[in-house]
Length: 140
Image (cartoon, rainbow, N blue to C red):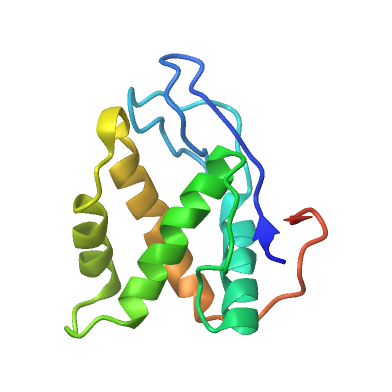
């Protein structure tokens, strides 16, 4: 078992998929700032912590991507596992930028910097003490 974050959102202006996770987070494709907000960061942190506690890695043994929230979680799992196993002593932001730049983003290149911003926002949260698991998160 693991924690999923089921969430999909497309920009009402350009149709690009992204997660408006904090106030004033613009669409990474067109720059529009929409009203909708989704509390993605705490739920993503819970999922990362849950996996790490139960399996020793952020990547769970099996993962089904059923939404944009889950897709980005999958990218975050591999990023944080790679960061923990790195040999160089570089900071997280530099490592994450390089790691994500090496991925093939296809026609969703706008998501690279968006996922980087999410990862940078999550990283300090992982160092904080565990919080109770949120009942809004779906188990699967």
